[in-house]
Image (cartoon, rainbow, N blue to C red; front, side, top):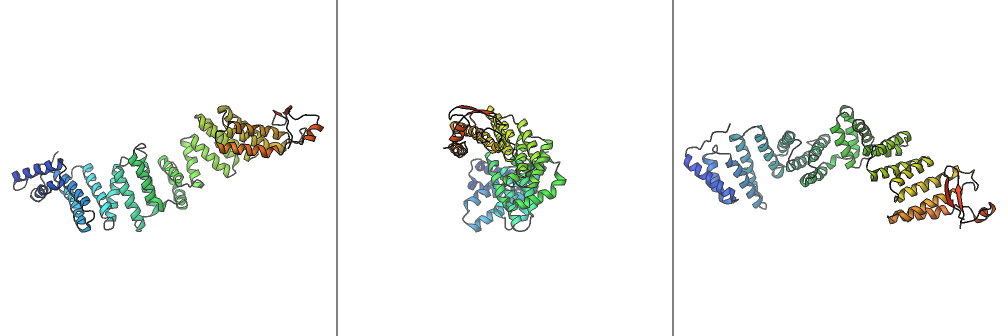
Length: 418
C-alpha cells in the first residue's frame, strides 16, 4: 500500500517545489535543483521519496565537484549520509527497499568514511551481500571486499572470515561468467584478500573444516578453485577435496590432476587408476591426446616401457602429427634397451628403432623447440648403434632392412655408429 503524502503546512508551495526539483533533476541540472530540494526537505520531508532520490544525486554531484576541498567534501558526505537516514525514517518501504538504502549507505561509508565508520560500513555491506546473494551488484561486492581487507588489517576480522567472504564473492562472480564488471570484481577480491590467502593458512583452514564440509559441493568447488588460484597445487587437502568431489561428480579434468599428483607421490597404482579414468571420460580428441601422452610419460618413469609405447601409439593414432608422442615412444624404446640383451647385437640394435621415432618427431614437429629436442635425442642415441665391424661380423650390411625383436618388434634400417 502506497504511503499517503504529507505536504506539510503549505501544501501548494511544497507541490510547486517538488515539481521544480523534479524538472531540474530530469535535466541533470543538479545545482539548479538544490534550492527547491532544500525547501522540500525543510518544509515537507514526508511528501515524496523523490526528495531523497534527488538528494542522493545532488550530494554525489557536489562530492565529486569538491573532491579537492576536503572540508567541503566532508560536509556533502555528511549530507549524503543524512539523506539515507531520512529516507529510512520517512520512506522505508518494504524489506527489499530498506536493504537497498542500507546498501547505498554502506557503500558511501566504505568509500568516504572508512577510517571513522569501518565497522558500520562492514556490518551494512555484510547484511546487504547476504541478503542479495548470489545476485549481488559487482560494485557492492567490491566495496564489501575492500572493507573486509581494512577490517583484517586493523585486527577486527580474522583471516578465516576474510576467506569465507572471498569465497562468497567467488560464488557471486560465477553467476556472471561473461560480465566484465564481475571479472574485474574477481581480480579485485583476490587482491583484497591476498594477505590471508597463503598456502599454509589455506591448508590449515581447509584441513580444519574438511570433515564438517566434505559433502558440501559448493564448499568443495570454491575451495578447489581458490587453492588452484593461489597455486597451492601440492596441498594434500586440495587432493582430498578433489577426490571427494570426484566421488559426486566424476570429471576428466579432475582425474588427470589427481593422476599427476599421485604420480609425483609415487603412488603408482592410484596414479594409473586416475589416468585410466581421465582417458575414458575425456571426449575431446585434443585433450585426450594430451592425457595419453601424460600417461605414457608416467609409464616411462615407472619403467613400464611397453605400456608407454602402447599408450603413446594411441595418441599418435588420434593425431598422426603429434611429434611429442613419437618422442615418448622413442624414449620408451631407448630406456628399455637394457631389457633386450638376448638380441643378436645384445641390445644396441634397439636404438635404431628409437632413432627412427626421434627422426619422425623432428620431421612432423611444428614447434621448433620440440624439433630441436627430437634431433638432439636422435644424435645422442645414434652413439649407441652397433659398430660397423660388429655389423660386418654378423654378416649384415649397413642400409639393409632389419627386424628388431624383443618387446620392440619393429622393422628398421641397419646403421653403424659414427
